[in-house]
Length: 220
Image 1 (tube, rainbow, N blue to C red):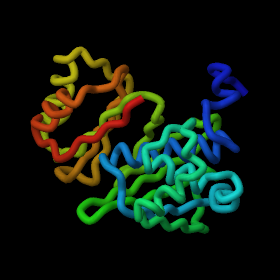
Image 2: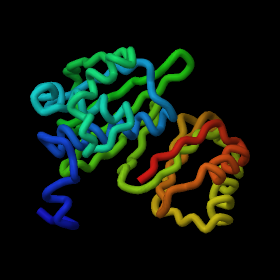
Image 3: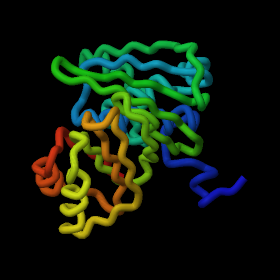
Image 4: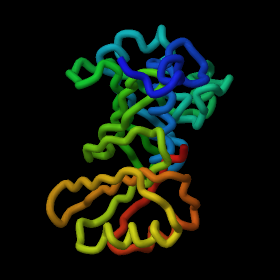
């Protein structure tokens, strides 16, 4: 087995007990919060296979909720995240789902408030690393290790070019990019991993690009 660095072995600085079940879960929850753009009022969390069997003992439950509350993996409040969510009157439900998945450490988070809703599937692949594999019905592969911009847009000519032109204007380098659509001419999703965090002023300009519906970001 090949490791890129010592941190692939020991995992990130975190509240334990497990890098896969705790730190990874916290990062999945934090990614969902970032993409939702605010703290949710409720969450339905489906847990699969290993996550479903051990989530209470390994702290996956409080880690996912800690991420939804915006906690980092090493936040000392992490172990009390369930109590904090209850104090904020955030309705949390954990569902042990028996459906088959491609990875044993898989969680499906459906979160929302009175106006909006988001659905995300994340997997914890070890050492605190994660992948986001689905967002609101779109398949994707997002590591969460780099800053990223997720852009919902109409599938129209010029939409991608208008976005990349703005990024080039601000000398923002694209490390990875993929596009997915539900069907020709319908909603599409751009996933753009970049080399640096993108300022809100750039996001505002991107919002005014051609055929853009909604923009969210993940910071490193």
